[in-house]
Structure formats: structure tokens, C-alpha cells
Length: 117
Image 1 (cartoon, rainbow, N blue to C red):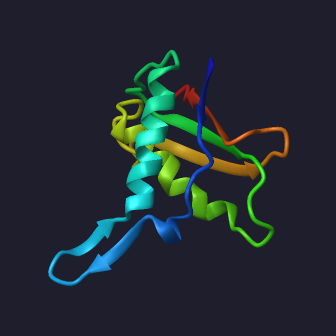
Image 2: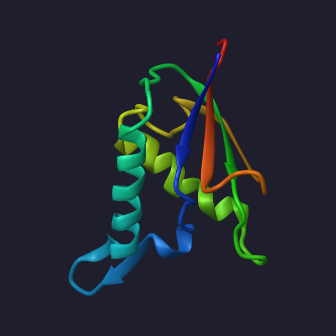
């Protein structure tokens, strides 16, 4: 069975963190705002927690013409973990991730399917 989640358009991995002298790498304010918006969207949806290995498919709406789809995966995976949908996004729990552009999507749609392993 495939489970569907709607998120705001994800931020690029290039904009998630910044280096701060004396503190090291910290999340940016824009990323914290995006995480808050994503959490609000998730609270409005019927969710479940996956404790088995999964395959993830991410479909993103229109991005910038020169944007890399692969740079959008991290924000999505980390949000699924932070909001207790996935236990972790390491190889023990995520078998595969597929990401693609989809002009029919507003924001981001994530499909999660438990593996038959």
C-alpha cells in the first residue's frame, strides 16, 4: 500500500545550513520556517509511522530552471524523520528514494511504500 503526503516545495540542501563562528554548522532561519510550515501541513493530514523499510518517491512542482532535483531530497527526508513518520532515513529504513519534477504538483508530494522484505 502506498501512502501519500503533501509538503511545501522543499528547500535546496544548499540553503539548509550556515556556518557560524564559535557554533559550527546551524540551520538557517529560512529552513526553520520551512520546517515549521511543513509540520503544520503534516498535522492536517492523516499520517502513520513507518517502522519498516520503505521506498520513497518525491514529486516536486515547478522549481527554478537551473535547479537540481537531487538537492531537494534532504529537506523532505529530514522532515519525515523529525515529524515521526520515519524512524530514520538511513539505509536500515529507506531502501530507495526517487525524485522527479511534476508540473501538475503544487509544492511537493511524497509517496511512501513499505518494502516486502
